[in-house]
Image (cartoon, rainbow, N blue to C red; front, side, top):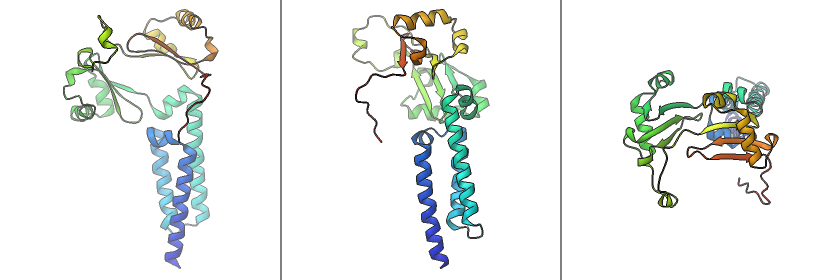
Length: 235
């Protein structure tokens, strides 16, 4: 009977974790930000006790499991609604290399060594650190790299360009419909200029979900209404 109970509890624990994973969504699995990491560790510990710890009643374990699931879901929900909360819960991307210079202070704060940085760069097929223009540690722990112009692979579009300007770091102007004033101030961009660019595109500020000046200097806008007749939504 004890073995049978353990089997049933293990099956129940596995089923519950599958349901919780579906509720929390793919982003939790893929990104693993600070609060995602805490939620996964805690839920895993509770589920493990549910599977084999016969000294604790199933009712108490289920209550604890559902409570932590609710907390994780609410944190994810409020993070999506509020950029400041998302920044506090999940953290911010950190620049490790800027304009070809290693940011030692940022690396010390994150306790990242040069060996680790070089290892991550090799994972991006970059074996010479001097080829890197920007390197950013993302929220999920991965490192995004922008190579210097002379180290970037040639594309079909490049073959038709005579003069290539040096790439700059992308500047996010609007996120989740909110203007990022800090980025405007750091780059001497006024709200009036931003509004004028939005107007040139035939848009209104209320319809813009995301706006960014890309590394090649182009201004990109994403509307809330995508105007796609048959959007692709693959599970």
